[in-house]
Every structure is written in C-alpha cells, then in structure tokens.
Image 1 (cartoon, rainbow, N blue to C red):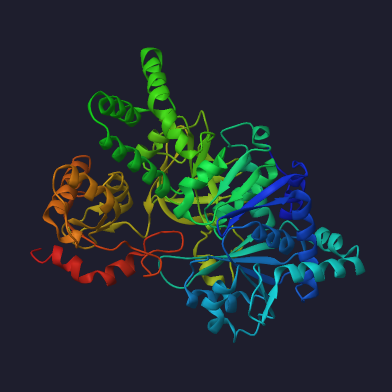
Image 2 (cartoon, rainbow, N blue to C red):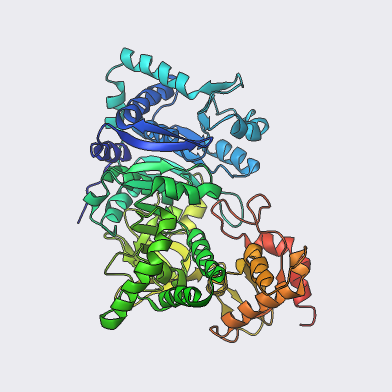
Length: 595
C-alpha cells in the first residue's frame, strides 16, 4: 500500500482523532503515575508551540531536549514539529562533553531539560554556548536562569490568543521534505554525527511499519502500551508515533529497575524492547526452575526445553500441538503473568535477537518480532510479522524500501526512509552513499531466495585472525550471552592466532548455582576458581556449535560490568570496542602471552 508524503504534525494530529477525551498518556515520576487527557495534551502542545515562537524559535531553528521519557517530551516534540523547527534529542545518559558538542554543532536556540539535576550536570558546559537563548525545565526549578515549562505554556497561550491564526499558518507551511530532527548517533568511535531526518523519512517509516504489526491496527485502539526505551533514540520515537496513530494509551515508566512492578501495574498489550531485556527474562525463567524439586522441577524444565525447538514459521501440529497446549496452561501462562498477563506482542530492535530468545518468547505465547534498521534509515529497514517469522532473520524489507547486497556482503538500502545526510558533514555524507545513491549501512548480511534478510555483523566489528580466518564477533557473543550465567561478553582476536573473550558473569545467578552445590564464593568473584569453572563449562558448551576458528580459547572474568559512565558502552548499550581494547589492554595481552 503506497502512502503519500506527509508531515509528522499532520500524521500525529490525525492519530489523535483515535482517542477519546479520557487518557492519552501516563507518566511515572517519583513513584506516582500522572495521567494526561487528549485535550490537555493537544492544548499544551499548541500553547508550548506559541511559547517557543515567542522565545524566538522560527522554522528551521533547532530545539534540544535532554530528558527522560515522559508526556512533556511528546508535548515539546509535537510543538517543535508544528512550527517547522527541528527537534535535537539528547540521551539522559549522554556524557557532558558530547552534550556540549551537540548543542554547539546543532546551534540549538532553546534547550529543554527535565529538572534541576539534569541541568546541574551540564550547567558549566552550556553556559558559554551563544546559540542557546533559553533553557526550559519540565519540573519547577530553583535556578533563576531556567524557564518553567508551565510558564512557557501560559505565555504561549496568551501569545496564541493575540495571533490566533499563526500556529495553523506555521504548521501548514511545513514541507514533508523539511528536516524534522537531527539525531546525533552515539557512535562506537569518534564524535557524534548529526543524522538529519525529514518529516517524510519518519512518517513513511511509521506508515509502512503499521502494515507489519502482528495484529490488526484497530485492535490497538485504547490498549495500554509501555515505553521504556529512550525517546532520544529514533526506534522508540518512531514507535511512539505508531502508538499515537493507533490511539494507544502510552505509559512512561520511571526507571528500568522497577520495570517488573510496572509490568504488573500497566498490564501492557505491547511494547518495544532491545534484546537485553528479553535475554534477562529468559535467563530468569531458566534459573527459577532451580527453586523447584522432584516432579514439579521436571515438568517445569520439560516445558522450558520445548521452547528451544519452537518454530513460529511452522508451529506445532498434531500431538506436538497438544503437548504445547499443556505446557502453556501449566507453565507458559504463568510466565506471561510476569508481564502483567495482557501482553500479546513485542518488537525487538537495536541489536540482533538470538534465535534462542526469539523461539522462547514466541513459544510462551507472546508474538515477538525482530526488526533491523539504523538511525540513518528512520529506523526500520526490515521487520518480521506473523506469517514471515523465519528464525535468524530480520524479516523482509518494508514496502518501498529496497535492499541489495554489495560484493563485499555489505547491506545497501534505498527508500523514502533514508536520511537527508549528516549535519554539516558533506564529505562524510558522500562516503556513506555509493555512486548510484544506495546508502551503505555498514552491516554485513545476506538475502535468501524468499527475500528474508539476515544480518551477520557490523562490517567494522568483523576482524581477521592472524591465520587469515574472518570472525564475526557478534555471532559468538550472542550465543554465549544466551547462557544464564553470562551477562556481558566482548570477543577479541584481531590479528591474533585465536579468539579470546572478556566476560562479565551474571554473578547473582552464578552465586545462587554454586550455593545450591554447597559452595559459597567470596569476592572478588572473578578470581574464584569455582566461578571460573562454571563459566568455562558454558564456554565449552557454546564452542561445540562454533567453527574451529570462532571458538573462544581463553577468557578473563571482569568483576565490574561494562557501562556507559566508563565510556565502554554507547547510550544505546553498544560496545565501544576501541575503548574496551584500551581499558583492558593488560587483561587482553595476558591471554596471548604464550602466542
């Protein structure tokens, strides 16, 4: 189905017609849930848009948002889009030096923060940035330089009354090909690059992605959806636009640490996620079975082990279907209650979802689809849907999106979703497009005879051993992370004779397992022989399924997890391999001292 180019404001206002005048969204803040009606949301967006205009924001200007997910974030976003300005989102976890760079590079005219704490973290860095004419805080602030969100709305309301036709004039003057947002990719190397996405880049992606939802779009109307991935990432932001297009009630959680309780409170019908959360769910389910004994334990693991063979493209039939129904009634239905009991589907993106987790989620009765894309592609390139749920793939490309594989196996893309370019980086923009206008994703993959897209690894992540063999580390890492005893892993081996790894065990699970065996490890756990022995068994088990040159010959256990604060992970939790190699040079060299 072909869609006509449109602006995001028009797309969202059309979607808002699907809401009753009751609940549009709910935000959890300081442990309390605050509801916002559709009317309140629309009025605040209108008034805030006029408030921004009164502050000097004009079409083409940039407005940055440095805040956690909340209703106010969406209000600001719609307001910015409606007056033809561009939204520059900033991760709440973004390092200060990068925030300073983003504000200076984008020449943001207004900077929006969530509260005093968020402002205090960057106050010293942004005070000298001349382009920033005003800073606005969602929460009432003690800082005199911060304008209050509610005050801007109040002022904008008065300004709008004095200029009753201005907002409509501004909104109608926005072109689908105008820049809607500049999203600075966190990047695993170098400074962030500002990805310019137009209104139609994202709007086309929303509309074509709606066709791939695992349910009838009308079924979503009035359903509760949960939002926890950062709105500063294009994946969650595009998903939010889809929710609004369908009339869903959006619940913004406060912290990932409380998500278990939030699932029970919200009882979501659907949510977007990254593989890590689903991996932890699967791990927790596996470990939980150790608490049982006898027949109950045997029955539990009989059901769990059945998920390892589940194929959503070819679901069980005959006697196997009867066994699956029994497993569902006794075990899987109880697992679904962890999500509130109403969860029907999830979409996973941002990184590769292991086949094991993919099978597990679909087997327990939650439709789990995997997508593939980049910030530069708004973001979806391909995604699965019921009927096209081939294990190990990212489904088929969206309509109007073309994919081809280059001679060096790099995935190339064309379509209405492909970015306008990198802001102020003409040379780097030209580098990522070939002579025929195909965008070079930097990912390696293949397309099978039925049109399913497989992602192998990041082109830059692949390395060659000194033996001449090429290794795709993500493939190895995904298999090892499927273990309930491994939390994080980075595979090493560039210009070395063999693969090694830095491993952060899931220490809570490791300690529980060892205690059940009558042994209590002491810190530092990474130096404990029993802990190492347990991880060695997991590595040996995985090595059996790998090619000889991919097997992990040696590993070092790390006591502390890799983190964003240490600079080892990007805000989207991708590993910065150059930083890892620098931070853990001694540990890496120790594994190759006899090479």
